[in-house]
Image 1: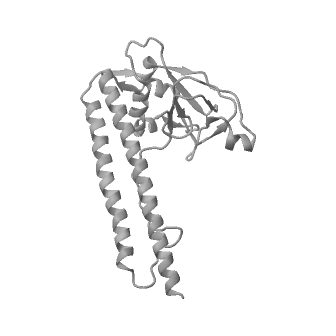
Image 2 (image 1 turned 180 degrees about the vertical axis):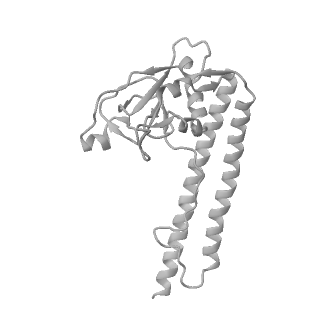
Image 3 (image 1 turned 45 degrees about the vertical axis):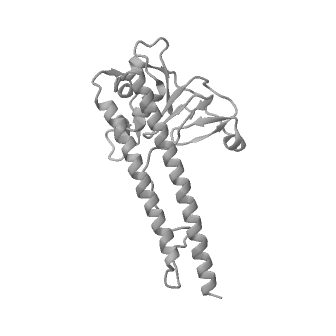
Length: 244
């Protein structure tokens, strides 16, 4: 997996499918069974996801050696380019382009090395080993060459991604005199953030568990989407039959 864009969220089971959750002819047993299937899938997969996350946390908590991110990574100078501006490029460009809030596309890459991209505006973090572009509202972290600690950059990403509260503490108000002020990531805060350095084997194990977690989430989302569609089709068919 070259990059993972989605934050690990609990799977939310919508109570509404395209505005149709209503069964007018007394809720067929099959319809209720389908809804129950959705809940069972959600609960079963959530338990497995929680088990994987707990395993990742246990591996980390058993270590006590912490190192500052600035000792592990090089902070690439901020990009001053304001592209892309072309709507077609933003939709169909060759490369991913990371902004402070979301991702779009671009035709010209800024970086080609494995990187972590951190938003300066909101607690969002990305990982990629592909060529990409980025705006001035992001920070790009790359592994220091010949690093003494032999940190795996994707392990660092997994750690930050599953501990987003650490990042949230680094977003400070731009104007402290105002009650409501925009926040921005304090670069020095991120540099001084300490990360548990594990053995190479344990880093690889956590990466594998994280990838497994993401795959599980994707599979679960797919199953729930399929079940929702089946339920929607059954409800629609039931409603159509009722009004004939």
